[in-house]
Amino acid sequence: MSPGPAAPTPRAPAHAPSRTHPEKATDTMAKRIDVSGLTAFYGGHRAIDDISMSVEPRSVTAFIGPSGCGKSTLLRTLNRMHEVTPGGRVEGKVMLDHEDLYGTSVDPVAVRRTIGMVFQRPNPFPTMSIYDNVAAGLRLNGDFRKKELDGIVEKSLKGANLWNEVKDRLGKPGSGLSGGQQQRLCIARAIAVQPQVLLMDEPCSALDPISTLAIEDLIGELKSRFTIVIVTHNMQQAARVSDRTAFFNLSAVGRPGKLIEIDDTERIFSNPSVQATEDYISGRFG
Image (cartoon, rainbow, N blue to C red):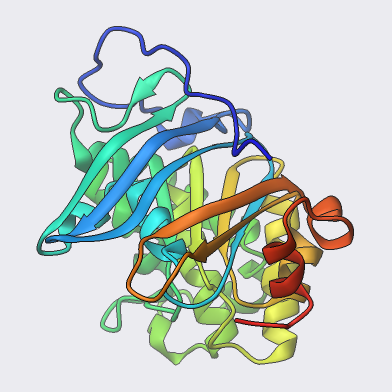
């Protein structure tokens, strides 16, 4: 099966992806991602090879596949975090609508504001209060009056389904929350700056089942506002939360990860086009 349409022809280079003041942002900012001929390296090692695929706006796309097949590496290329790793470099294109995120005039810091990320383990700033955790990115990106900050913090915590649990202790350390609450706090921090895409790298792997279901419910709510990409090893989770699923695999040990197929999640789990996908989903390997 074809891995996806080629990226559209880019417009003239932009200095950075467009930004909107969070207080004035709309709920229709989600962007389409088109990856074309993407190869990522760690020094001389080719981690993923010639990936081409599309991620639709206002949807959830899940990356699945065995450990070491490049799922997280690909995720980190989407917001230029991969190049932060020593020896990390990328060939190919990542288009956010019509902007080439690896264009020579694009500021990678601006890309990371536009494409937020939630990591595997909750990582609230340990010395900051719940309020300051959410407001941290806003303060870095602009000058806000206290009333503006209060409104955005409340809206973001409500968006992460955390407001009712913390509204009476906003001045308490974020590190004092439970694991599931900390992860939702990290999501609130990510959405406070109004990104257009939200990346999640195994966001539930360190959480208990009840917290996991809370995060999954939240993902379902957030997709109406954001383009979401999630890496998960949990097949049931991918089936529950995603609209489309991409399966990655290694052709051999030490070889780069490859995109095997991408399709609607229902089809991937019920009638995949490639035998390797069926073997992985059914537990024959991985």
